[in-house]
Image (cartoon, rainbow, N blue to C red):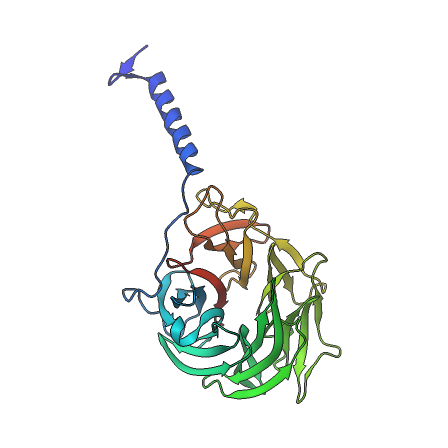
Length: 346
């Protein structure tokens, strides 16, 4: 057999095969892709002014500094903000505004909490409550003007309980309206019907549209979209145009305005979208889901749990396709932090 450079053709083929086997074997043993990120790093560029951005709330123990991470529309990390827990509490909820600001909900170490408007790294307006804290924040329209809709409530052993829905002016957080609600209403956002005088709410049975009136949130004849039976743990609600997403513990439920009034799903990460994407373990929880503005059929999801094969961090951002293909975007935490909330500005 002819040899070239001391190696026969057969030997070279065997060596390549052994190298391929070794690489494949190591792939399953890797720790999590990427490491903890520091969104408050001053070397990061500020998010582009006037462009949509993604905000992620990073929660830490009460004696540690809380943080928000910000991403451009193409999911490039831009400069976030550090928010000391000693001054504000622990992050529970976030909302992203079209003017580039963010709204953050905090829980203090006892029972109440705070709603704060954050511009860059500065808090420019805030609302406090001694008994409840913000559990859902979203841009809305109220009486023809840009506003912020907030569910104030508390958390029981397994989920949130709503107490009231409040509406605030977008820039100043001046109170505009407030409505007592049943505990099952845990999130509000803009309505998929597109009617400016409506709000969409997430309740035990699914999505319910409301008409904010003087004394209550009226529901007579308003849009309802049912969740499948067996979905007991609802985490977040997001509406972008006609697209609606609900994050449940097991995955993401989807609905599009104009289709039959029933959510499809839940869909979880089933297959890797790229060869280097490792999926969340089966026990991972889907904490938040928002419509991907770059491709409205897709969903950005926050997942809490390890990745298959082990990972050094337990908070991850994925792009979830309609049939369950998943693309890993990155780890979503500083040291001792974990992601708890997410929002994309309009």
